[in-house]
Image (cartoon, rainbow, N blue to C red; front, side, top):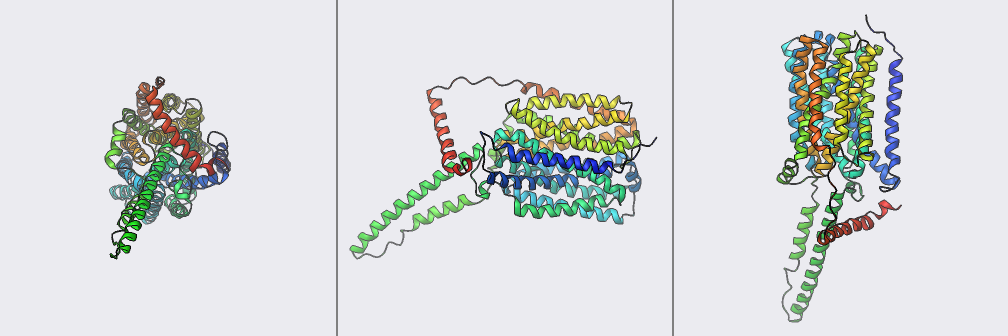
Length: 547
């Protein structure tokens, strides 16, 4: 029996999702008016305009990436002349392409900064979506030719999307202090999850009332528009916008740069005074003018020009050592593989599940509730993880990820044994809450915490690339399981991997022992460090702390 339809439900869902998005924006605008990170409104507004533009740009990349799930349905398979397994091949290849280039491009983004990366990524993805829409509009063949064409178009799209994936964290790590990043990642996750609403709910509405190609044309045009917004509203760092840095590592680097500038200025002044004295003596003796007097100034100018070159990253050798010599980072790489399997295993196949097992069309109440549940679950999952991490776990991330993976395993069991459509919808929706918790905490927040501002994009790229390897394997594996065993085979394939991810986090769950009181020498070093940081706060950020 087919599920009932409710045309009004889409409007209600849109209002609810938009209200959550507005609430997240208000939270960001208000929570930093309290100590210890009390910023003036001007800084908060500039930061808000910065990240909301980057966030909505990345949300639109979801709009233009997960629109592929609208093609992974029985009616679209018939139109293309493909089986579930054949379409799974397309999914696997394009995701592997994403996995490779999100790692490679992460290094590039660390060099060019978040603004440039967002512009490149949004422009390229927009063009790729429009080209895909054109192909589907004039498509005549079926079968193998569509496998080849769609694999190329989707891979081309995913290559450019990798720039936006790492850009969001590259921007965030520079604009938010470590103690703010959990909540920030939660707020940012709501904006990103808005992209799931666009991809699943809005694209579903578009497909229900127009040709399949429309779900690629619309995201393509919007992505191109947001690329233009990034040119005018996004700054890679606070310094680029005329504000002092807020991250501890950036503050220390700024203090070191200022120290080098002061030393060069003092050296030039000493050289100039010495040259003037020599010139006075030579003139009195009737000698010619000292032509070499300006060489010191020229050398100092070259040093300044070299230092002023914009480079948001660090040397590759140092960058790789920072990441791959950290055992916690290596463990998180394996956990993120499990997250990719669990996350895309749901997102790429839930539509087929509700269509084949519950006979729910895109416009049915059940299908829309499932799509909305995934979106809202993802929103509150990322926000909840950030709040619990910062305010209940002392900015520690692994306990939150562990709890979310355990809960995910339970939700899969609920969906597996569901006898009613609403129970299945509840189980699938809550899996979104869980995988969003882990995705936000591990792939974004942990990457920022462990890597620092100069290596964040590379860390995010590596973690997200490994996650996408897990995602890629779901394409072929889940398609084959669904073809042979149906929905129960698909759900069974998700269960053991989520349990494995939870088990892997157990070694890093215990809170580390408190450090012993430092000796006199260590206290002196710490005091020196605090003096530098205090000077940075009092001298450079005085306008920032006190209006």
